[in-house]
Length: 64
Image (cartoon, rainbow, N blue to C red; front, side):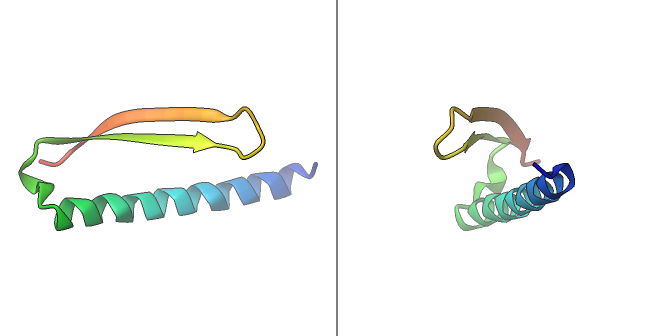
């Protein structure tokens, strides 16, 4: 395995996840008029097809 290629590919994927996730959250806050809520509970689940990978991150986003 080429470590440099692996790292670049992983960073590209994680950047896409971050950018598209932020866009999705912003869109739902706008479209569902959630700005009046104090916090939005969120959960991200990462799986890898054909592997035992299951990574869960839960948190809250302060909506002000």
